[in-house]
Image: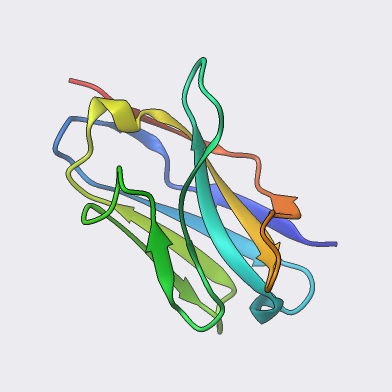
Length: 118
């Protein structure tokens, strides 16, 4: 059974930075591409970005240039570095695991709240 546990959320002022981490446990980590999603109140969950097992990352237009996804295959972790945060980045952020070659995640973390406000 795969488990994903996010950490690092919190309250930050506009323009600030925050780093989210996701710890993976279960089967072989490198079987999965890892993604970060977010869901703001009253909105659908959206993909923030994802990273292949080889370390190639893709991002939503809304965060490209501000957010960076990385993974450590030795430590079974994936991180989301968020810089230049905006109020519209406020959401619950979820880590997710997607089997390589598929389009939908099969495992989700419980989510961590990020609030960008002055």
